[in-house]
Image 1 (tube, rainbow, N blue to C red):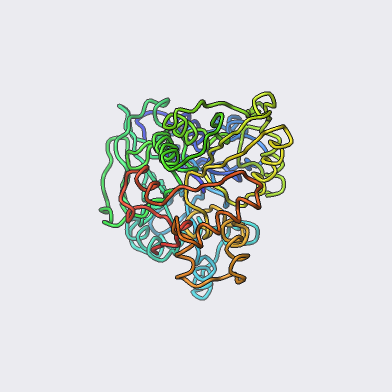
Image 2 (image 1 turned 135 degrees about the horizontal axis):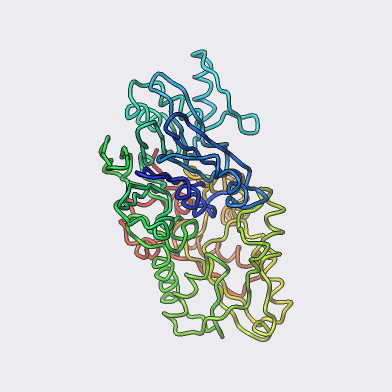
Length: 470
């Protein structure tokens, strides 16, 4: 996915950007970067974070930076920030974007005799393409709107000039941007959890398609927000950090509500409830509190050397890392009926391995409760599951095996997406058998929407029901 942090301060902002960006490390795995306006020039640095922490890589660079304007990024794809020279003036840019028509836009640029200097694995750098689209217009505001209108997918931007920072949220608000305020300036971030320890107070959410210009002295609206919003529901279920708020709705509170909804619709009688660390814990606590069942930890996470859930990029190695991190507590597992809560089942490979280990450790029953509906569509708007084909999704794989075709028609898929239908029940049962679970239940869509607290039409639920807007 990725995350960004920027600040405009009356004093030095280097440490704020350093720590603020670091608070987004759970959102990306590949590269990190920072850029500053020193008062006379732009300075930037980019490092790989696939095998080390953001802090470890960037702390030695801090003495070379200075300035009161700065932006940082955690990226799960391209190298950022970029420093661009243009007719609009020089600027630095970071993005959180998923460009589904990247090749088409790049081809159009080549036909117009444009060129690109940055590349990611031999492909066009998405952030450079966004910068090019911005520079096609006569002002930064018009350029940002031009980029967001031409991009199919999603695109949130921080663009730093010599005078301040443009903060532009995706036109449908799929990814968040939040503004914080302090006596000496303002900050803007993907995650509001980056604010409290830097002494920024929550000021406001940037609206879908809204463009703000942030300076040490103020936060000026340059383009009003759109009426329609499709913020990613998965932020609350999985991606978001527990201490963060989006649309002024706290992540951990939503996870408690998700767990409570699962409990209200459940007749299982486990000996205790557990959460798959880390994002399943909040859901499990909500379930246990609603059901009045003990919460215990039959799995503990070994964090001293395996702290990052996304590291590394390679899926086979990622599965190995995930297995190495979770250590079973056999004395709690033996002869017990255990109900686990987790945020989702994507491929199911890691879960299948864990279930086998639990039964080998003497568990009597393993029940699984999932905080969201079944994932049956790859995400088109964030860099979630983008490296996976449709059939890598456990839900879609089950549908294909039941129907005998890879692409069932829309009406059939709608039945699979609707809780309680015969097709939905058969799909869930197929997944349960494949994973060797005693029982498996997913969250109902209405209950997930209720737990988040926004109207469904203001939430993106594409990965569960195929609903999408470009």
